[in-house]
Amino acid sequence: MTYPPIPPAPELNWDDLAAIPISENHVPLKMLEPGNRLRIRPFYFENGISGAINNIYLREEALNRLETALSLLPEAYGIEVLDGWRPVAVQEALRNDFYRKIVSRHPEYSEAEIATVLDQFVANPHNHTMPPPHSTGGSVDLTLFDMQTGQALDMGTAFDEPSRRSHTAALEETDLPAKNYRRLLVHIMRQAGFSNIPTEWWHFDYGNQNWAFYTRQPYAVYGMIQKP
Image 1 (cartoon, one colour):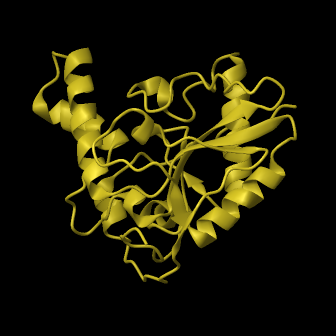
Image 2 (image 1 turned 120 degrees about the vertical axis):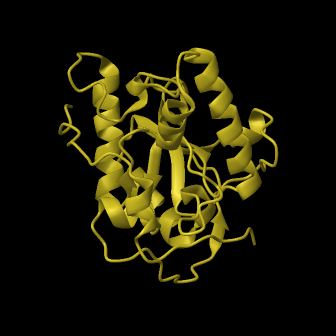
């Protein structure tokens, strides 16, 4: 089955997102439990990132919407969740790690160019008017897997790959199978109420400032939250 093309979306502008007010609704975090078609793989813990935890949490409302997305997914596929709520210490470690990757790949970049690319993939953990999206419990990173083989689908890039090909619509002009997989993922997640940031095919939001910006809500309902 072919899914609708991924529509264009505004580029990330952290100043615009930070200007969105937050009216915290105090919905608690809830730990995700694996199921037949829902795999839990705490990617950063698995890869030894400082401060990462061996569980995945989301706000309860976001978790309910993830379950809705799973119900919309064709039965041949399952969802593998790689990250959810994230401590600020992990955000700091990831930003430092991405900085090193960008410098290694692009030694010709100036500090300003590095900062531009860095902000596309890892939010600044010290922006006081915008908590890092994952620290709100409303962001989830995920991919799809084949139920018959158990293998993750080829989505065109690796998870967390800091390149233009990671942009959600980057494959729209290609004939790669990954184009339709990305379309499927975006289709079911949006139907369930999530938004997607255009620089990361794997990243979806509900309730936080990212979500409010991309779904044109007057305010966010999730601010930063501590682990229960």
